[in-house]
Length: 148
Image 1 (cartoon, helix red, strand yellow):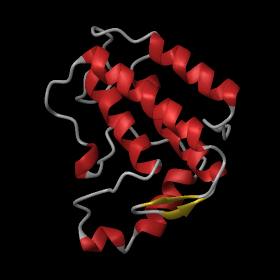
Image 2: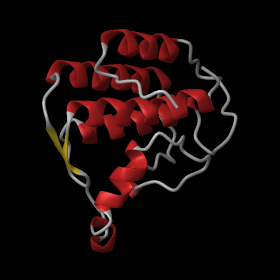
Image 3: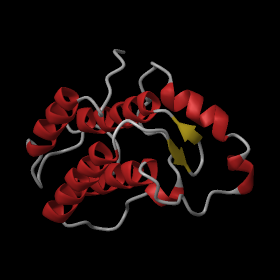
Image 4: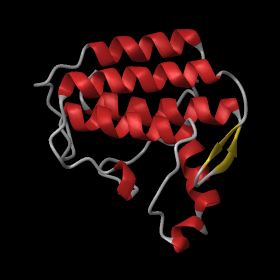
């Protein structure tokens, strides 16, 4: 898997174009989330990468933050139907347009923060390359889930 970086303007713009192709009726090829829930999920992960606290992490999961970070940053694609942190679970109905705008705003905020080291609640210090790749890989996984 090619390691793209969401902090690169061309990669960011391509991601935005893919998001714009989503509709409220775009069906997932796997999983339980609809398009609005997926965008809320992706926005939340980007918000946490941008510095929002990750709450509710069991202490024993925190012990493995380094290992989870290693998996997130590997070049191996995510498996389908992978378990997620409770803060990222989106099971309630979401407003499609609101979540689309939220995701786009989260991406803009990431670009605005620029190429600086950041601190992730579970992963610790992340370089711009780690953050840009990790968020691209996650977003790409879910946009592919919805065929865009």
